[in-house]
Length: 377
Image (cartoon, rainbow, N blue to C red; front, side, top):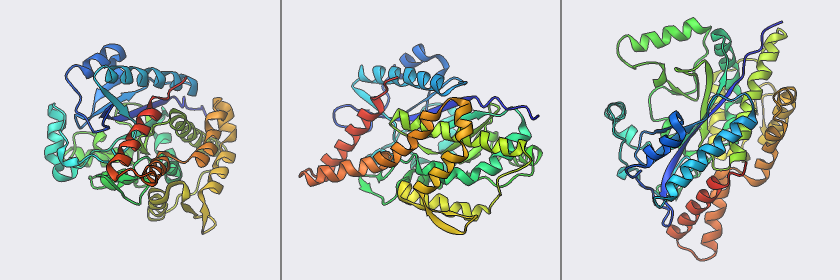
């Protein structure tokens, strides 16, 4: 009998900092990060821009433990920001900020990154959500990464929050990916034969000095460079805590489902990355309203139907992890929409009520402040 991986769970969230009254993007004032660190030890850190802050849960063994840790993290950030007239928003883009006014964080690492990325880096006024799942065996980590790539567009559809950019609706549910894809070493990873092939790729990039280490591989999913985890990075930062935990729970269950297949001498079919990129684009463009292609059937299928299939496939795993409620919350996301859907609805409602474009976008930011702060345990 194959030994089951730990499947520990860790969640990282990036937040924009905004003025509580005007909704405008704000630079972290002196003392904010230090005050947060004093309460959260090593679980809070600066991000690429001075208008961002990042938190990370501890390694968790259950979804309830992850929920409690995220509540504690968000509560602290919200309180310390409020004391300084600010608020965090867990959204991938700020609805009306101008990236040209962004300030890169101090520190040699961030300054070197800004120098390397130039104009592509200056546009990185974006925030993501990353979920780590513990898989100790390196070969298994690569094997599961190869297979779970198929489901990344489905996961993306559940976690979009970037419909606006520089004060305009983009027509995309995840405009963040458009910005992020402008960087090197992003998008879907290639298929690897095993851990040694992955390590050879890393070595070929590190030895000539092209990258410092594997943390500069910014794929949608990757083996973590610091932890024995498989880290999914495709999701936009997401304001509603229940939506965050739903995404994390489904990702974790998908990995266990694929592990079960392997235990039973089966596996998920590997499809061309070109085909999966088509679904990635469809999810990026339309989110929950997308018809994604079922490549086994060779036809487009409404996302809602594909979600039901995922819930069916992973039901034993949700039961094993005790996260049935969190996984089934995906059906509520279909009803309520993702943050992108709600932002667009808020904007249209404000415009219909007679507000001008700026006022409507400010209302969107206020909605994001409220949703990010709604963290009842």
